[in-house]
Image (cartoon, rainbow, N blue to C red):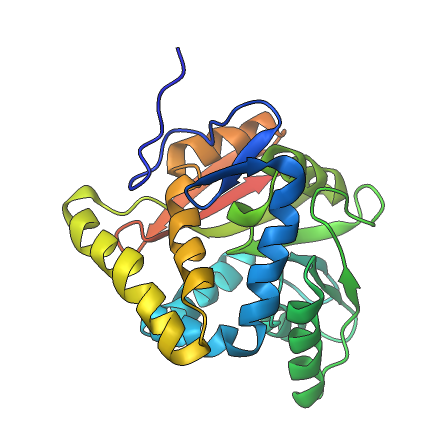
Length: 260
């Protein structure tokens, strides 16, 4: 029997009728989701980093720094940043990989990728970039030492397919790191719901002139698999040594997996 979805606190998995998926709390045809998500990120691209600082009180920088630390990137490594957007992770990882390394910034959204490429150039860094769908990565098998995706997995239509692709492009011994919003500790849930479902769209309207996109982003968090479910998805995709690190009482979680 399929467990119903609680639209506020999510469900153990992204359950939807055949041929359909979730766009926030709305059920839409699978073919329509990618276009609608693209519209969201075309809209927010220029204000994305400003809104991240406002929404998280700057905590997103700490979450990303923790992810970079866990990646243990060494000089000469090949790294793929999926849904890398404005390029903050790619920039930090490229410094660690050094001139002998290779760090790719990729995103499915042209507006986000353009902002990221421009900011890297402004920082004096020329990294390879690619407009890429995580479900169909344009890279050979076993090419990368590390694959990262920060706050992008929940927007993908077929998360299981994307995880299989991430596994495919990793070398044996390579590591995947998925940083994503997750399930907050239950005692904090009412306050978090009030903030993210009511205040966040208001901030989106005031700062980015786009309440609807930030309402979707808040809703998409609730429809994303919880920590345990996502860990099982990594294992199903073939990853071993799967670990989960809850950050800020579970507001976000870092999932790690290794391709043996």
